[in-house]
Length: 189
Image 1 (tube, rainbow, N blue to C red):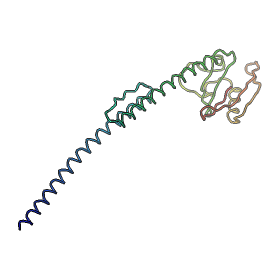
Image 2 (image 1 turned 90 degrees about the vertical axis):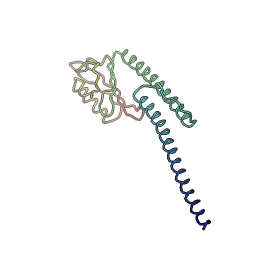
Image 3 (image 1 turned 180 degrees about the vertical axis):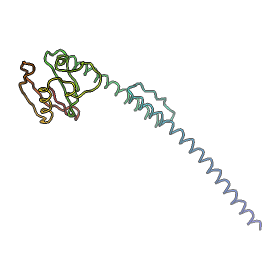
Image 4 (image 1 turned 90 degrees about the horizontal axis):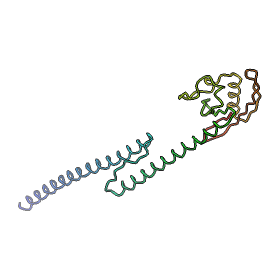
């Protein structure tokens, strides 16, 4: 009888100890989950702010080496992205400066017909102010039907074209050629 009673007490003690261990393990897992989730949210927020053109990393590195390495790598990536975007902006400004130095009108149109870039010399061919901010289609901006038809045919044919256009009793030589930049097709006029 003593053996049975002690075995039952010992089993009850094991069950209680098991439940205590389970409860403590669950609490530790919950705190670990909350910590990991908060660190991942910090990384996510840092990437989101970089996406919104703020390239200053704001990640506070935690004590865990895995998150520390990930945070450092993400910060370096964001800083590099910021530098690349600045280089791109400067190159675009240089390109626009070169285009504006040209005496002949230049238009760059994408495959959908959006006027991507144009220079100051092209102003006489346009219906609206050159510095209007919204992206427009060439057929909305250009004032001469002959030029609009030429551009339309050039986009469709995707080949180099040359044609003499008579616009307001003046003869213009229109030249177009397609080019690809970053997997996007453009046509230069």
